Length: 262
Image (cartoon, rainbow, N blue to C red):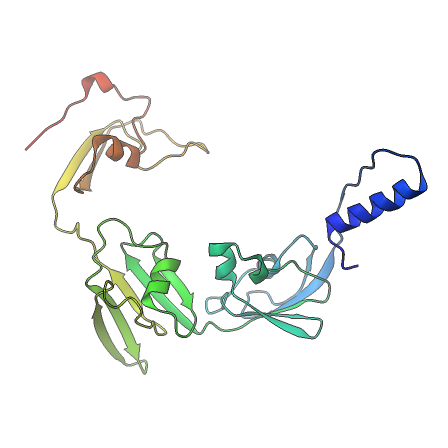
């Protein structure tokens, strides 16, 4: 009890070698022991879930069918041995901080509270969507959680729509370059506009996949030419454009490539 797998293996090796003349001992974990932990709060299926010591807090929450809409992954409480640990699971997912998503132990109780601040971000960011923030966190934090801005983002005029007292709606225009630390409030909606709106377009037609491909899994090959209009970005090359569209399909004939200039 209290030993890690490596510590236990070393202990067993030492005991065996001290009692019999052997050079090599194999010690393999065939099946981890299972035990129950209790998950409650704003989860879809609160109650007792069965886990093993190789699983972590987030795995137990997943066994409880995950979070409800307003469940917080930023302020999870772990009750263990009459102590309370406050866990911020986003620090585990973004920065691999293992102490924010510890391994489970028998008797653990996990409480998921209501989220304190929920904000939406759209536009020119890597991962638009809904995010939870802690009190005091800022526009800079929200953009970081959304994976950062993408090419063409207008940073000197970010729109923040804010609801006050559930009735009054106001719109703020923020220059991120000079004021990145403006605090985000509950139900804020942030929009990062694109510099490519109403810009020149590039039309590309032919035997292309139409989207980036990794070929790590089966993909349907288009049998007909596609026609797309792509916003022009200064410095964009033909090679980069083809890469962004998945490249030519097996039906492409590079010897008949045509380029038009208007």
